Image 1: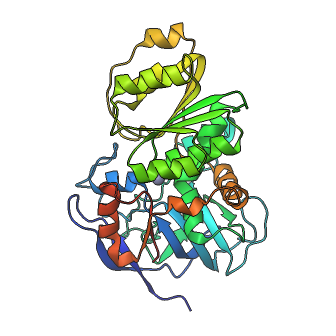
Image 2: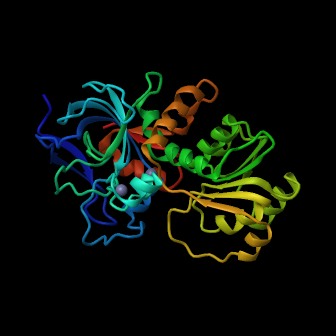
Image 3: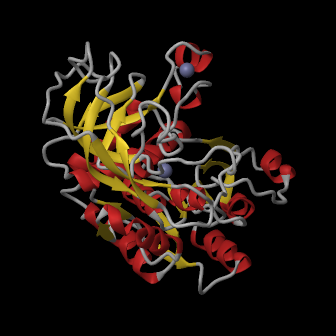
Length: 369
Ligand SMILES: [Zn+2]
Ligand SMILES: [Zn+2]
């Protein structure tokens, strides 16, 4: 029997701790929806920005309360009418472990014409839904979660734990879509990765897995750089021991004129102009990390003169969730990917976990509701 209420950590006011509340679990599911018991909900860096009211596009006085959390792995406890298979046609049953995407409308320009649902104009993202509106429990920081009818859903491979799978559903799937968009990485390519958080670390492992000639990961603190080395970085540069000029100089020397591919995964305000200087002429620059709206000064001339290929990427589609899970399944024999997860917390300790993420003491905290 499914209980009537779910314990949920609710963001009620910016600057206040999240409140644990009992929120009703919908008795009836819409056609295509799924009810899941949340096995693991990872905390994303953007959750930390959300609880501080730093995500653009919201009116934080009017739009709260919200249930944060969008990195979720769960076990099916109830299938809505008509649900028989997942997004790639695999049969689904109660007890299966799944991950699911944001909800996409399936009929806008991007869903239909460009087939890039991450740009869906009517996308319903997890992490920002109200516990006051049906289906009440559409979020990550909750014992039970509602999978929207419009959400892609795929099964978790047997050899991937649920806590690791939860990290595939934002951090890794975002990396996967970014790598798809920037194009192939060849065995002669030098790759510079800005950032040693979950996105930077997964990018390091992915670039190594894909056969890059040389990988240099830039970030901090030392513990994260250590993981970067274990995930395949040939060299690491600490941002705590260098300044922008010395980092650029070091990269230009190490790569004899710049990296073939630079990947921005840090989110640091100064990272984009800095990374532009690290790309070689004719090289590529992938911008994924800049999740907060900063304004910086860059040289458009350098983009023209170096004939750079600059690509942005945001979020991912269910294809990228699926690929992310496959990556975890096969690549965990080569890298100890569990090192991404720095700590696990019960739902009640959500405020502590957020604080640890905010102060960079945790690389990736996972809630086990
Ligand atoms: Zn759409
Ligand atoms: Zn995220």
